[in-house]
Image (cartoon, rainbow, N blue to C red; front, side):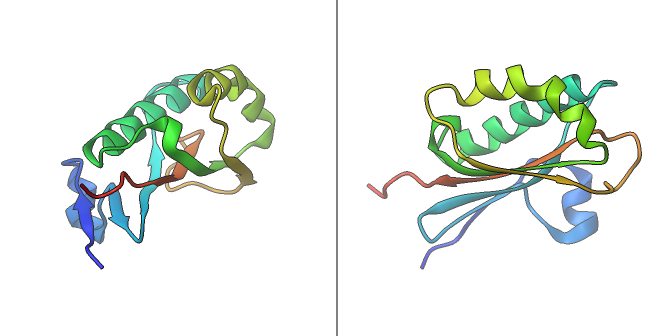
Length: 122
């Protein structure tokens, strides 16, 4: 099996020992991604943009996402993301889970992790 690792250039990748995404076994596994901004909605959109970039590097898109997990320190903030998520996944909604938990830094309001189908090898 071929494994392709996709790096975003974040200094945390080398510091912690991970990469933004891994293409393996017919899937693109995108690491948990936090976004920038002050509100949960801003961070949600920012994280989705980073995820979309990683998927693009893998030859996939948000339409290929089959599983998404949302991590929030306050589940009551999740509703502020509904329209953004519905707009992102639209006609191709993935299976989804939302978990309330602590994140690596209190400034982060949401972390998003996805799994997508990898493009067929040509």
